[in-house]
Length: 295
Image 1 (tube, helix red, strand yellow):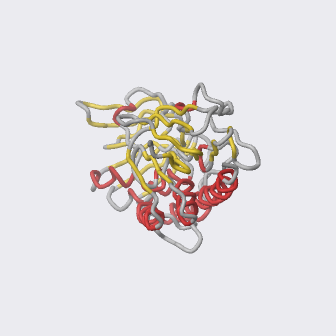
Image 2 (cartoon, rainbow, N blue to C red):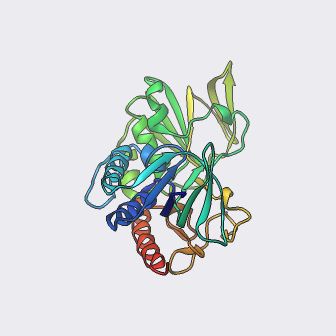
Image 3 (tube, rainbow, N blue to C red):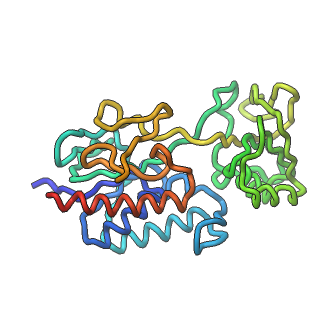
């Protein structure tokens, strides 16, 4: 007989891991399916200073602790990409790349998102992860495109390696004030506003400059932090409804369709904070537990 999980969680960010911990504690059969890094986007954040009770923690460290806690309750995890799910029946069939379909009574969509691309010439030479690629730029000049929390915290991390960094923002800086204050104190970083990127200039696959509408800045590398695109394309053709931006719509119980729940950055209305995502994961776990009692 095929194994049927009580819940399959798609994504291992803070929402997915928090839900996994709570569902695992109830001795339910839970499987987490993660396409990349455990912790999702959280895992590549250099430093998190606003997660309650864990100040100045690296995202990878926090993700590791959350997964270890979930695993201690018997939660399983596989690294694979979910291609689609078959809604409208129970158990739900989850089609996973390179594997037999996985069956579950409920599914929690906590897939987060992918890095948003700008669509400019030369973008194939850009980086999107400061912790992944920053160490390659010791003593180099960098341009960081974006003004949100990810961009500013990324620039602060890159300052450990680079000799000079320009943060280029099209409109205004939207990062939290504490991060903005840190940038003002970092002598390696210069902030420029009114900067609309046109092109990343490369010579023999090596970045030499970033061209904006009003000026060209010489650089050895460029990091782009332009937000996320929700990882929801695999839900096309299902009973799950998406908003205009592709985020999953849910009701007050975080249910998107019968037996299908959503939490975290992929959910419509989420405010994109790690603590909020974790809280939604906990809420979703409670709603899933209640739903499972109907079987």
